[in-house]
Amino acid sequence: MRGGFVLAVLTVLCHGHVLRQDEIELEWWESTIFYQIYPRSFADSDGDGIGDLKGITSKLEYIKEIGAGAVWLSPIFQSPMYDFGYDISDFYAIHDEFGTMEDFEELLTKADSLDIKIVLDLVPNHTSNESIWFQEALKGNEKYYNYFVWEDGIIDENGEMQPPNNWLSHFRGSAWEYKEEVGKYYLHQFVVGQPDLNYRNPDVVEEMNNVIRFWLDKGVAGFRVDAVNCLFEVDKDMFGGKYPDEPFSGRTDVDPESHDYLSHIYTKDQNETYYMVYQWRNVFDEIAAKDGLPRVMMTEVYASIQDVVKYFGEGDQIGAQVPFNFDLITDVDASSSAADMKRAIDKFLTYKPLEKKPNWVVGNHDQSRMATRYGSSLVDGINMIVLLLPGVGVTYMGEEIGLVDGYVSWEDTVDPSGCNTNDPINYVTSSRDPERTPFQWNAEKNAGFSTADKTWLPVAEGYETLNVEVQKAAERSNLKVYQALADLRQDSVFRYGRYDSLAINHDVFAFRRWYKADTYIVLVNMRDMSHEVDLTYFENVTGDVSVVIRSVHSPKSEGDVFDASTVPVAPYEGIVLKLL
Ligand code: NOJ
Ligand code: MG
Image (tube, rainbow, N blue to C red; front, side, top):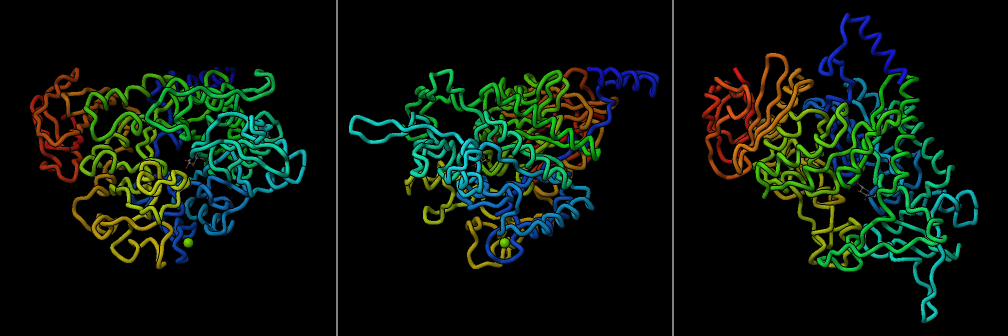
């Protein structure tokens, strides 16, 4: 409160007038593109078939070239890889398949020289069952026993021990695992090898704060925070000391082992979660105050919009700058209409606090790739949406070249979410391997990802023509469109400008950005149908528009001029127009 007041007074003194919202200098994270790298699949430097840190370091120029200013790395910490790094056995060490601490420091130095920020992945909800903490807990060390969530089993009518209640793992089956050594069950909301930490224990809170400090002190620019809404389970003291069963979700399309079978009213979205996030933000800001670099927090939460925006915080309780907005993953796809798209975009803009920045995410290592979900013809159009809407843009590696899901046979499947189905036919609907297949650099062996004879996941078919090298050489490509969009994004219109949108008809979604005298209109035709659209439905739009950027297959040229009342739009075309 007081800080804000002092700042306001200073602002008036310095500038003679109070700055408008659209004149305030942006922090580094507010206008950048965050590029997510899944380290196992990006670039393999040592030929073991698994991507690594040196591989990433060698490709940082590429990240610079496409115009991203920050990289978020999925977990690089020591791990037995039951969940490919989301099961961390040592939060303070680099996983050996990825390299060493020196390799990581080199990566940081090189990134810094290119002015690329590095964001790591914090996995606070659970550790690996191979962590020292869990191992100590099993040995009866009370301090570490209390790091985890333990519960007595139930003896059934046959005298057999059963899990404490009906809670289910995200990866199917009971969320409880019995430990002989302890004589109790521990909670694991994810795989058996991911015991949940107990956030009602202040020691756990302090330990995770230290993990945050350790990496931020090294110069890391922030964290993406994993599975945040699973941090707290209901307080069992409110239920006579026993965790209560969760109710049936009502979903008859899933079997009783599936996570979706239950409604997670006791294991997700508990109120305490938000306060933990605000508490973390204080730690982030404490480090930022020391070295002057604002640290960014990005939270991974699939929940109702009302709950997602709570992570921003309010008033004195400040939370994440980037609570991931997954609406463009969960609410729209290739079958959506322009109106569906408008509604999905307006949703986050409507619910977020006025003074906070929106963010746009269309893919990650847990979701079928953007080009697969929307169709390859829409890649440029979707990138226009992600990069030209107000706020933060997030790109999952490969979206800039329209990478599609790879085919991974049942034999080659390694993701626990696929393997745990035990179903050689239907595993594909659960497996996340298809969106994790290796990055496609060129037409050489393994798409230039690795020199190994076998890569940890197979390279997707078609890499000979769908890769970075081909798209760099081509006169027109998804990559070139992406670069043009990333450039244009630097313009004040996109950094500060206002926004409105229209579903022009069933197929064509249009949005406008404007600042001072400049106005841009972006058109995305979501269908295989030609249209002629009238942009004067936008208030104050009349006269001519000219083409600034167009999708790969657009029949237009840069500089073409149209009357705003009759703009032709080709099937699946994406166009950025400037009002003349
Ligand atoms: C979300 C991560 O993105 C996913 O890959 C992981 O399996 C779970 N959280 C558990 O950490
Ligand atoms: Mg390697």
